[in-house]
Length: 203
Image (cartoon, rainbow, N blue to C red):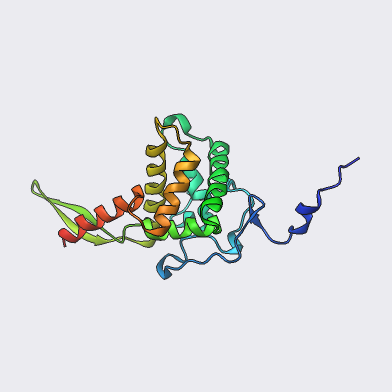
């Protein structure tokens, strides 16, 4: 016989929640320019950030990828972790629990705020001519802001967790909470300020 499904899974079968507990309904993207690039609308809601979608096939396809999945993809970096998406997802699950315990907010909203705050708005690019390299300030496109924010956040968490007692989920939770608050304890925010400072100097 088939085991009866537990009640709680049937109760919210109509609303998709991340890991079965975090709702996408009340998450909002406060930055207008990033609205199309941070996929948290209920349309992109997933239970597990592991959709196996072909997000790299076309140029802006990755903007359709759920933001949590983008995070889990960029967690599995540095050779020894490549391709271990189940491990990355488990870390994210723990991270979300920690964030919820520390802030009482919806962790998805915290991630969105962190990505909005951590993406540099202005960067310096190298313009080299005849051996003279000078930096020229440029505006950063929304997609690159999202990509760079995710990258900075995961890098900061990875560096904090490396050779440290704290587990990666704890470091990632700290990083996301600080980035969402915009406090400079976060590696991502520090880097962002640094990048924007350099860009401002090279206008």
